[in-house]
Length: 305
Image: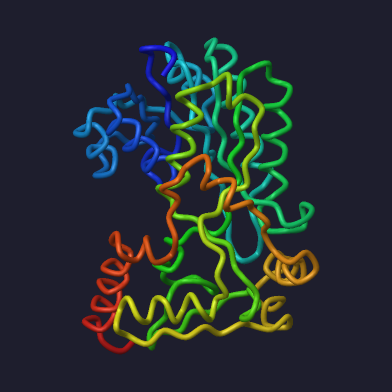
């Protein structure tokens, strides 16, 4: 780190923010975590790990400026409201730009923003608000790095989603073509790249990285998970009509995947930057399989639904 001042972590009680906060703390860096409620279990866990808690809200710009004061950098992951009907891109963009403005006012040195990987234009899921934030960063005068992760490996743990997660009976349902490689990333690896950027703001300034750690067909991924769990998992690719029925964003993304070939992160180049990049087998061996088994056991214990 270039300063003893803390890094402000937004989304600190969420997946990416939480992973980044804990990684920086494990490296003995100072962390200030932006939280709305300091009494939640996730917030208390951060405090117990050594983070300073700052109470604030993305819809309260004054609180963002207070939270950013006397920090040297910000990890930016603004909250967005989403459903199968669409993504709250206007809200997401506004919130992200509010944090950039607060960081400038507080004379913060650097922002690391985590958005979404590209596979085409803003027709795809959740891109427009994130692109607005990237554009604001590029003209902010701050040192910045943009991370664009692909699908999370942790999405296999989702429950209740119309696509993704492993359902009762071991079925994984998604938009992706069954026979084409699907890129994915472990959330801990997003945190690792963020930590690299925070450690050397000058070298990482204005860099944009598409992030993935694995490229494997959904069918082969299901087979890999089956072996790790000793429990059958199979993949089912939904059709265009079914994707459209789930919502316009999912239908548009179904078509875009097939038009563009999907995500295109350069995994060998990423591994050169971070040799510990996580494969799907690594993720399963490092706790992912047990978490999936816990979900299977919990579902079985709850009985028929």
